[in-house]
Image (cartoon, rainbow, N blue to C red; front, side, top):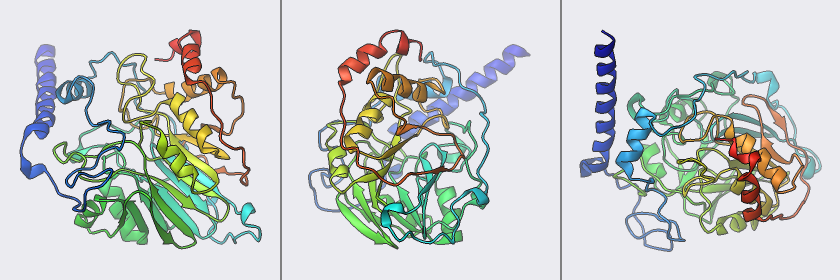
Length: 396
């Protein structure tokens, strides 16, 4: 009986893997034209691309190999917990809706709650902003995909009225139609995204503003800038790069907020483009899903903790929050490796301050008024050599 059950399980795994693989070779009917426009420095008339020429959409070893490893977990990856404890924030812990703007813009309150993954609630008086809202149990189509190990840091019903939603790109762990539809029907927020993603939202009955890199829109008392980052897009593989990916800079009375979205480093020029829009009070920077083979410190599509520290320093931000880790298993590294590796990288770089680090899901954080630390750099090669020793080698 045990062998029969085991055989059935592996047969099911094989079928799922083949279905996933089929999506990469089947048919044009799964392709979608999300955007049509004039070719430029990051659009060839049909698909978008990273200006430095790196194609981040090609997994190491090929798609079939990558999908098989994801479905079966046969890449030697460290174990992850099935669930991690989360204490969701209650409405009373969030910034009160009645909070009045400060007379001095520099003293404008800002309260931030990490929901999990790339979902963050950023609150200032009169404006509630939500980044890449994702409350679903799985990150993928038709109920497939990585399962959530950390419950959302705020129950969806406990969210305050959302005024603005930022959507960085169309991967399922960032553009979750189920969550977005519930929020849209409840609050009718302004949704700002990058080119092509509005077509996906429109198909689900939601209106959105889609902008190209270096374009902006005024929303309430804020100006939302869609800025360059380094990634790729797809809902079905065959629609690869039909829609654009982006980061955001939001101009706010107390200082700018930067949301990196999902990004690799690439040529890194996008960091300076964001910084040029003005001093950054808060930077939301990903640190997870960077390792797809043992010892890897970054991938083409995802920065790891070392590059995240570099991005934070070059932005010259007052405060940074490490996100995009510990919620959905998307890569090789252990559950707690990203924040531990970030701490180790800071020690190796001689940076003991706490301006950039990991926070706890569901625990609101008040962001101090902005200071101007200025851009900071470090010797990346030296940090990597340091991490190649006992400090980093134990972090799988």
